[in-house]
Length: 237
Image (cartoon, rainbow, N blue to C red; front, side):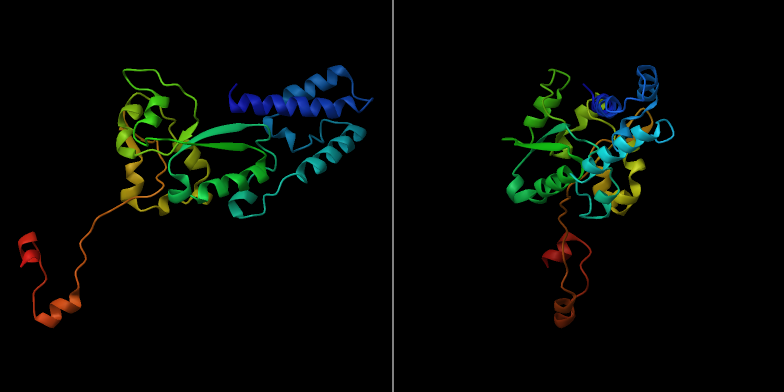
C-alpha cells in the first residue's frame, strides 16, 4: 500500500472512532465527513463539519495524540505535523553508518519522535553493488526491498536512465526553505542530477563530495623568490 493511501486510511479509521463516540452523529453524515477529509485530518478536527459534542471529542483525542510526539528539536521538525507518519515504516539501505554517517540514525530517531514514522537501517556489504541489486537494471528486476539508499553517484546513471529512481524535483521545491538546496556547493549538487528528455532530474541528494586540489604555499615561494607555478612541470621544479 502506498504511503499516501495508508495515511488516508489511518485518518479515516481514527476519525470514524471519534465519530462513534458521539450519539448525535448519524451514519450518513459520518460518511460525508470521511469522504471530504484529507490524510492530514488525523491532526486537524474539521470543526465546520461536526456538531459540538463531536468536535469536543475530536479535540480531546487530538490533544492526546499530539502529546505523544515532540517536534521541538529544530526548525525543520517544528514545520512537520506531529504524528503525520504514525504507523508508517521506511527501509533504508546504508553503508558503514557508524563511521561515515553516524548522524543519520540520530536524525531518524528525532523524526520518529516527531512524526511517529520509523526508519529501519540496514547495512550494505558492497555500496556499489547492493543498491543496484535492489533497484534493478536493464538486465534484472530489482528485489525492491528498500525505500532509500546510500549510493555512489557514478553507479546510478543506468537506474536514472531507466526511470527507476524517484525524481526529487517537486519534493525539493516544496521544502526549499528548510532544505536550502541552492546553498549546496554547485559541483556537488550537480552530481545528483541527471539530464533526461530535455529536463534536469534531481535523482540524488548528495551526502558529501570529495575533491582533490593542490595547495600552494605562497610564503615558501616568496621566501625562495620563486614564481607561481602554472603547469605541472613548474610545480615539479
